[in-house]
Image (cartoon, rainbow, N blue to C red):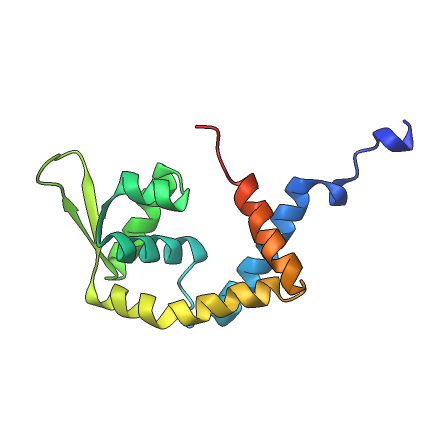
Amino acid sequence: MEDSKQYILDAQIGFLLRRAYQRHTAIFQEHIPDDHLTSAQFAVLVTVQKLHTASLVQISQQTAIDHATLRDIVSRLKKRGLVKVEQSKQDRRQKLVSLEKEGALLVEKTIPVALQVTELTLAPLTECEHVAALHILQKLSLTND
């Protein structure tokens, strides 16, 4: 096979995105004050805080977490007493999620650290690269729905 046709794994976008995400996740787990809080759980909590009360569909759309995974995350957060789940009065098929007091306190305590995690993740980049990286990732994350 010619060199120009070789598939070099560590030069592929998927591989590099996965490695960057693994690095970010390690930084998140190292710095977040709650040992049992994952970045996906934090994303759900922040989204519920922003929306006050949200359906699973809304949370899924905002967090880009598939519905099956989201149900599991919400169930874990509920077991920890961080969120409350109720049936919608308007549409009994929908579950509505809101923060319990403990969940709201955890979000408030975690946000400053999460902002620091973002800075630590981007630390190897210059300020210009930081802006460019976020812009490029936002562009790549757009869907064609």
